[in-house]
Image 1 (spheres, rainbow, N blue to C red):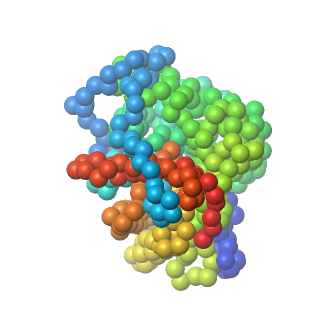
Image 2: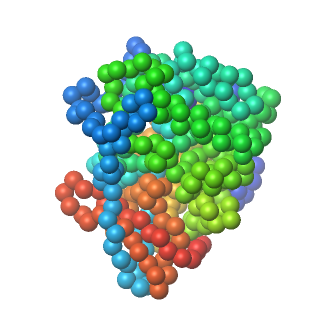
Image 3: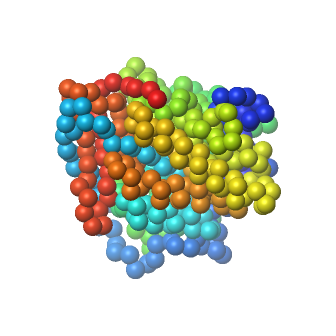
Length: 418
């Protein structure tokens, strides 16, 4: 999260009716971004020491604990034959580290206010202090190498607290793996070259850092993660949206339910890949106001088409760009909501790119859609599979009640396209 490198981006000058797929959160691109919380400046809004202690069965070295069923999960409810499905929307966050400016805490509050669930793709090394970086052995790279920064001890501490807070609020904790190696590196040695065995090593290490942070940090005054990560982890998003083909065999072997690493399609109902073992939840093409082409439903892709990849573009255009980003998200949502009700997926980063306008655009989008009829703001874990048929339909909904989350999950049978 300190610097970024990009995949090829198709801007308006490059193509018509095309989606630019680019990546963020990795080094090599030379564009400085918000750095996760430092020792001198802990993130605002971090959980305070007065929060109740986590109780449950300690696992391993006590970094995690089995506290039972996750709170704020939906209950099953049958949809009637032919009933129009709810509109599912997933907001997801890559990296999910504690930032100096408190963006993680900000969006936990936004989610609470709008009864939303989200997915936080945690980078495993964000639970490994920088002085222990040599414990990471990335595939095809030297020990301790990473294209995102290792965090200070205090930033690790705050990340652990915020991830715990997120899970207890009902959000999903996935993985963004570890070192974030993109093919845009000068040596082009990114995750696009990894084998299934490389991905298995990367995942095992990510899990080991998350489940062994107490040993690696020496913290004795921080509650354990209130979940068994080996059971919680059912999906992820690869760095730069690269390497999915080699990842899928490993994901299937590990029993994952989905992968959110591919770009493609407009608003379509998800389909299974890897011999029907893994649900593919891609980032999607959405209308880009003022242009004839589609843009990928991720903050950095919108940025790349506005300021040419610079995270510090012309301040005089920030207001225009913020509104354009918001309107792009709303246009993608409306296209699904008014047609086939395919789930709408959005990817984000806790960053202050171009003055923080993309954070504001996402928050305003959430505020505008959250209370529309039949809208469910969910995590990937709760996201629908196939389009409902008239013969066999089940939904999982939480009944509306004060302070409760409103969510749903569908498991049905046929894909559909907008």
